[in-house]
Length: 214
Image (cartoon, rainbow, N blue to C red; front, top):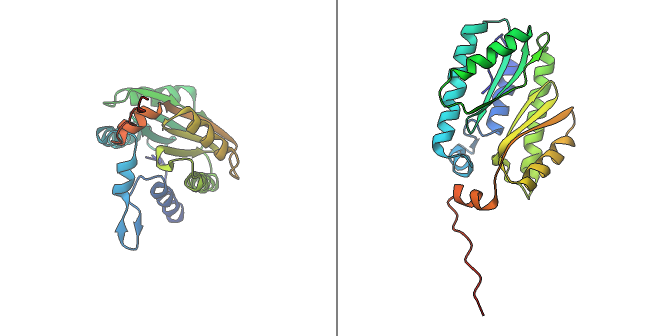
């Protein structure tokens, strides 16, 4: 979820909506048929964790709006109860205050505070970040050796944050891909590293049969 503590033009809001659809945050319509259910089915989080992430983002947004009004630009993204804060705040005190606000939200198990103490980014920069996110997502989809829906992509001032429950190979491969995308200044990995067996369990796949003895 992206919390904007100031107004965005309609065009930028439409672009943000497109990026959210690419990220699997909303059902994607193809020929009038929703495929969002299929994306949920391949998500490596449990259904309970997915619902909790949505609740975390909504509650965090509401509480941050109450705390800051339009004095800050803060993005909130939660993946498997791990919260990423990005954007800009006016001072170090505000940065710590935002983190304290998130600690009051139920079900949060960790916070990565990447808020920058600086003036708010321009609308042009935010529009560019939306496009970068879309390009990174498209590149992950094009990679035949990755499951793109295992990754959540967030971009702030050209810095790409990669979230997800992935294997070490997948983490390295996705990082390599993201670094080659135009407009990416840096890649920050916020992964939960898991093994192949855990992936099979999360997707309900049967374990491989033991080899027959001779």
